[in-house]
Image (cartoon, rainbow, N blue to C red):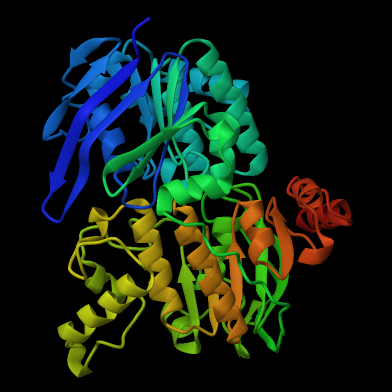
Length: 512
């Protein structure tokens, strides 16, 4: 049988960079084939070429042995190619079912599409409500929409760009079962991930890219994480130095915070309490859609409905304080959505600094542009962001490089309190190690760091104490040294000691 996909000499140039430089790639029917490389290596561009979202400048694509020109994603889908993007391609103002309907056969009614979504999501253990507007979904839930939408097309080639970046370990295991089932039917899978353990567990072949070129093809099952790191970035990431914390005074306190959901599809926060101290990292785990968005909005000031005394920031009652007032006190925040919330896509990296940094603003609103560009350039250099310079638009960066810039922007501000959602989403192993080391360095300098992540390995690597959020309620804190992945996984279902009594008391209070 001929190869499902064969690329020869694929080249794509942009003004500031050659994203793909004579790339060749072969994928057999039923093969799960990884594409590995550091941020900006050209992986996502190559996948967009295959899917018809980007036109190559040179090279040939063969699909099932036949030369093809894929001019747009519609032609790709007709061939049997589906793709799950790292940056989601969803319309926020319509429902999940309507988003999926746009890419399917129009002979199906919307009700039939919704029924198929429920069936497919149930089949693969990806909880999803077809009637929810996309703008009410968390990043993890949007990831599920993209995956289910791709599965509904019955693809012959499925491209997955960082599909597990915001999925829990349980959801990752279910997804792997799904992908192995698909491969068993003859579907070929191109799998991009920076998680080396995943690639070694799932894939039978791996093409490694660096600076737009293929540097090798290996069987990842015969490699170690260290050898894959060396192939990808030329070295192994340095081990994280996690010294015992010296926790100081309480920097951020939440006391009995209860907030009704703003959206009919949101989650009520119920009697949430936590304390974050200077010089510690507090990690919050949880399955996506269990109140993380609502809690982060209340802490950052996006939702200022909380009683003033319910949130105390550096000694000041801050429940009703604006985001600017909280920044003035020393709180900085990295949202889970990079494009649109963490950064304005059309603005330059330098201009994006003004979203949270005001050092370059002068009296009367004048901007010191040279200082702003120098500041952005310093962050680009310090965090090794691959970009055309301070004046590059945010949308021109790869997902991982934009994440590095946003993290660098907030870390460079020397905050007193830093709240971070999904700190290493979509970044390569070297960059992830650098970001985690920078967070621990902030902690060691006395900053209070709150990390919300669905990646348990990351939380165990970074945190001094751990908590879990489930159905809008918070678990008791547990020291990282006393916690286990199994225990935290159980708590993510809401099964911590006293949880049932607290939920019952909450229900009784509502009824009264």
